[in-house]
Amino acid sequence: MKIRRFFTLSALLVAACVLSACAAEPTTSTSTAAPVTTPSGVRGAVHLDDGYVELGSGPKVVDLFIDPLCPFCKLFEETSGPMLFAEATAGRATLRVHPLAVLNRLSQGTSYSTRASAMFVAVAAQSPDDAQNFLIALYAQQPAENSTGLTDTQLQQMAVDAGSSPVSAEDTAQYQVWVDEHTRLALTGPLTATDSIMAITQVPTVLVNRTVFTGNSDETLAFAAFYRDR
Image (cartoon, rainbow, N blue to C red; front, side, top):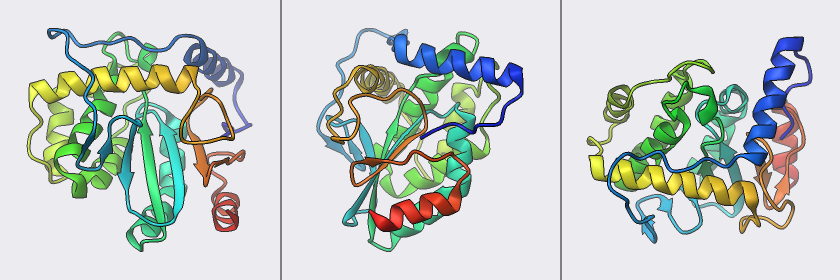
């Protein structure tokens, strides 16, 4: 998905740096705990081997590659998210949310993207019915780029507010490793979710039935038409 075309010069430079860094510098594991094995299998709504959280079970498949710190991901969630969530709830679509950590460099060393994505995965694994609410909350309370982001305590409280039970330190550590590993795989490819692209070069990247949407994050009507025609 293309980012919006109209920028101030400073915003354009920041966006260009972010996107080139995402393509060239896959994130590394940020956990300070003892080494953990990347989890596998299916836990709740999480398809661990394939790198996504599944919402709904309809015939039309939508893949969303997102980062919790990305303002354009927030814009897409606010403009097209309600329609996609409604389609999933109605049984017409399966949303496969791929939570990535490509913007860690914009959180002053706190690896916010990894931590927030991992908390989303943890919620989806232990409380699948609350994953959508937590994802919406992540963007509603999105911190600014180049800030330290929300603390682990704040993310934990968001999970509880969304309806989940508290996430254990063990789960937090293993899902952080999982997020970092699947971010690396998404950036280097090949993707297993699609034949249209080999690797992710920017977030958000959105595919409907294996075809990439090439519009902007705020083009709600264009995306709705694209979704309808696939």
